[in-house]
Length: 316
Length: 132
Image (cartoon, rainbow over all chains, first blue to last red; front, top):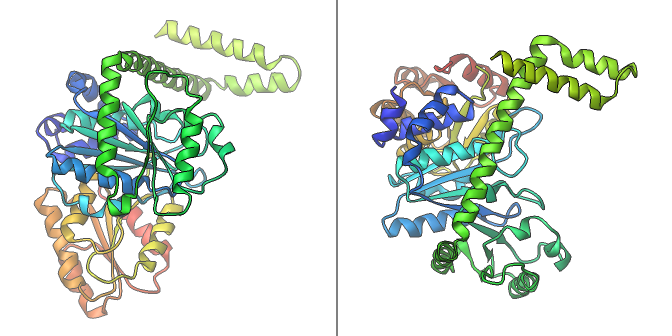
């Protein structure tokens, strides 16, 4: 199968295979992305995040359906946790998106985190690029259920929707740092439950401490299951996008994101080289032994490793 | 190459009993596979679309309603039409012995009836997927 030709020819199989190749770290995949990189930048990237069980998949499903009514093409990357013990995973987000399966204007890809800790998988960056090149207008990234610090979604999404539900915890949970700081829009789902208004009020109260004077993240009560509030949510996404562009915030954020992405790729390269060195030379074991015998401290050992690394780079 | 095998576990047809499918899904996960679980009442078209988008190595279906003779071969044929017949197809559920030869002939690589240890299914998938 000619993957690149297939990708440019709207062949779903080729796009799907390319995403797998990225997940598996195949160099050929990087080459294809390099060649097609100029075609990225068309899609709007929307992050859907929030604690486990708040309805992220259902919200994504309903937003996607609404956009399909407007004739937009929608890509979805749904991440679920990989078991750190077996490497296996159950990727179940499709259960809530069952009838999107048969829609030719939708492409859904499930991913395991495969060891990444920030709520996404390393390959999500690549998968989003593939779907962008493939011609999607909107790409939703659904993170794993997050706790208080899985915030990698901000490295990728133009707009982050934080989905919450009533009764998740007292207001002290809401003022803890981390996930509450990354929402561009807060959606209180399952708002037919008691305390929906109170939850929204608590989030509003927390937002009073917001550092940004110009843009205050809106808080919206929705019932995704019944499609209530979904159109309004889409409007808020558009409003946020307008603000981002008008204020110049988008440019600024995008530059920041690209800086992070380059550094992440670079760090992965360095790590790969380091692993290569330690596998080929036994140097790690020798250094560990020296530190164990108190002939060396761990900081000097790391310096030695750095020397080895620089020498290795010079030779290449 | 060291990569997880990706399996779509699907429930075609109208019966609402997915306990068996879930047991198999968990067993495959514990064997280090990435299991894409689709939920109940999927049409063959939906299952094939899922398998393609997820770049699956294997589609594992469970049916308890008796519609296997129709639905299993349909999935095999649709995969073929989409040029995706390198995806391994296996089936399970309440399937009479007499039906099995015909299903195998129709392109379902393996049929696992009640009482099959999950390890048998796991080994079968590991040994028979067509991609490296």
